[in-house]
Image (cartoon, rainbow, N blue to C red):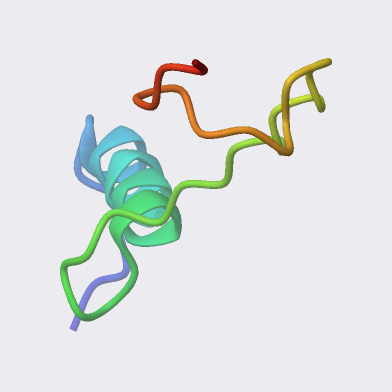
Length: 51
């Protein structure tokens, strides 16, 4: 049995590792977003008019 590396195989493995990091082993994309900064009108609903 030989242990020769097939050209391009290490690049494919690196790409696969990146995909696993992004999507996990369950196939769901893992993202993280920073929380939105608080605004001046946070306590009020936007869709209600004030009389």
